[in-house]
Image 1 (cartoon, one colour):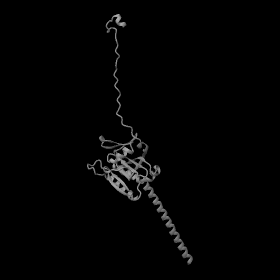
Image 2 (cartoon, helix red, strand yellow):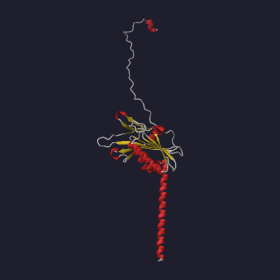
Image 3 (tube, helix red, strand yellow):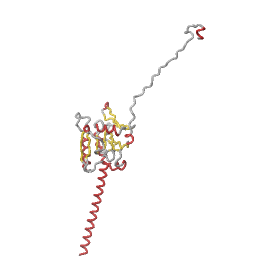
Image 4 (tube, one colour):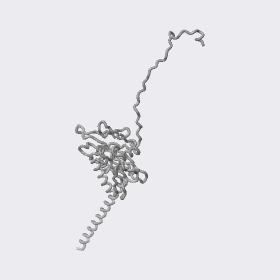
Length: 278
């Protein structure tokens, strides 16, 4: 009986030790994963970050925000909370500070977000959003010599829209800035979701402190919303390279035919021989 009780106690003790070791290993794994996430997003526990809100371009009020942009902000707020940081939500036209002091998430293209326009002009000079007012569309995302045109939902295709996802490194020991600049609010939401679900792979590819710029395509947003996203290209080099200045269209010079004056013997008056020899 004593041996049986001893065996039971040893079994319970072994199980308890194994469970404790497993719990400790999982805790360490979760902590390491959390620390890597904090390092990539620049949000150690107890710090602050900026969530820069864009405006709804179509709405008449300057403080209106698209519903999909609100959804994107909510998901970013959940990420900030997971990292143990605090979110400071600020309208795009009220931010008056440089980069690196706080981690920053900037939502929306330059048309709807003045902060995005400033970041693109300074840090990503190769990027431009070219509007098309004649067709009332978000226009084209142009990066270097590459153009990504917004496609409407026509003939049941569902359309396609693109979003620029970029991470801008700051000075040493500074915090990064993330740009999620889509052609539509749905594209902004899709860019945020892609960033949150692929940040580990992005950290492995570009490093925890690296600058990168990616173009993502949102497939058939009419049917799938922001859920189906494809990475189209890594455009880091093109985005960092300043665009060639726009040149006015050259017009071929007009050639005016000129005829050298000819002196006909019949039109010249007769001159004396001495005059001709002078």
